[in-house]
Amino acid sequence: MSHDIIVRLARADERATVRELTLRAYAEYADVMEPAAWDGLAAAVHAALDAEDADPRAECIVADRAGRLVGSVMLYPATADAYGGATARTAAPELRLLAVPPEARGLGVGRLLIEACARRAREMGARELGLHTSRSMAVARRLYAAAGFERAPERDFRPEGAELVEGYRLRLQ
Image 1 (cartoon, rainbow, N blue to C red):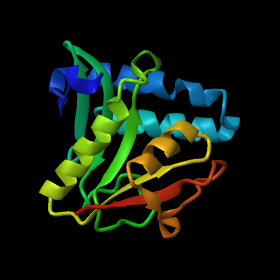
Image 2: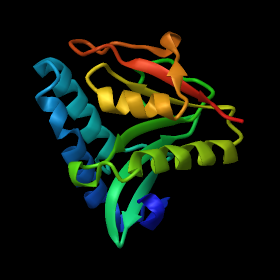
Image 3: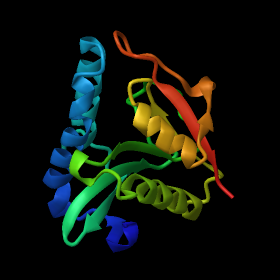
Image 4: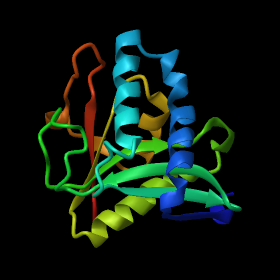
């Protein structure tokens, strides 16, 4: 099914669409997470996607199906601080805010976005690709495991009032 999906860099005029898509994709966690944890995640999502706060070095990669965005992800270079000082920087690019809205799930969009990030990280000369997630994101964790990510507990961090944010890495060939 994913054969009709094109993965590419987002255009500047798609920022609002990416923001809306990401907020819809993450909305389900408001009912799953403890209120303080959800508040922290929602604030982090907004900060990462708001034009004035967003890191200009991060690449926004989107999945386009017939001219309609059906997924997005942010890829931060190793030199960027993807989490605003909450965790130690690593020598690896970081995949963040992988988002597939409910109506596009099951099409292979998440897998395609992960593959695009891994490909781009290799092009950057990286030996691994990192990401962070939490226990409430069970579907995402299964997707990451299927893609070959492994736990990197030395990269874990816990924002005040939030769930443990677990570090993962994908070793690149």
